[in-house]
Amino acid sequence: MIAESIEKPTTRWQDFVVPQNWDDFTADDHAVWDLLFARQCELLGSRIVSPFFDGIDLLHLSHPGVPDVDGLNAILTPRTGWQVVAVPGLVPDDIFFAMLSERIFPVGNFIRKRAQLDYLEAPDCFHDMFGHIPMLAHHDFAEMVEHVGRLGTAAIAAGEGERVARLYWHSVEFGLAREKGELKILGAGLASSFGEAHFSLESDKVERLSFSAERAIHTAYKHDAFQPRYLVSASLDQTIAEIVGLSPDKLLSL
Ligand SMILES: [Fe+2]
Image (cartoon, rainbow, N blue to C red):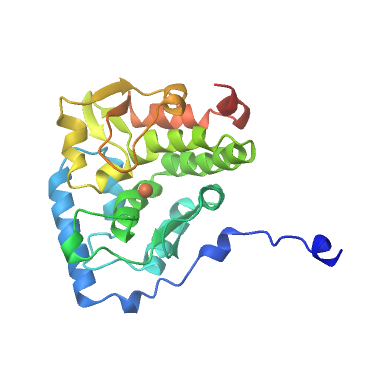
């Protein structure tokens, strides 16, 4: 009787947030960030949609060492309303999309070790902060990611979380887009990957299919290997327009 009357506590995204403990990053952690940052900037060059490096500059991400979330938020939040929070690792999908729907972006409170520069068991703060945060300084992209959060929450509630996971994967994480006719990286998973950034653009062993929200929703992906296919948007604006134009009902009916 008593047990039945006790409601299961509701899990909130706030329960997953931890202090970044920036002071706990070691000198070698900061050196690893600097190494990854320099290597990836050189690798990407002009191979990424231009708002990415605009965001790097705006947010002062080229400042040496692991960025501290308070410093990022001091610039990012007044600009687009997004707030970066630290988490100890991957958060459950429902929590992740709930965060996005409130313009909260979780970043790992750890960085890979020097011995594992290219091997990651879970996304670390280099993937999260270098890959994702610069684009959140772009007003329309910022709106799109919030919308993905709302779509995700609705899709998971309907038992269709895989639809939004695929949409997210083929845009925010591993999307490609044309810019002035040239193929560019859009997704954070590619932006932060030493091996897959060039592979996605240049390999002749993968499929590159035109992006549409409907195709993204129905296209499977790999989370433990390079992608066998990439979806290419006609432009960053096309990706944004297609996703922002999706209602939850439309997402579930496509
Ligand atoms: Fe990511």
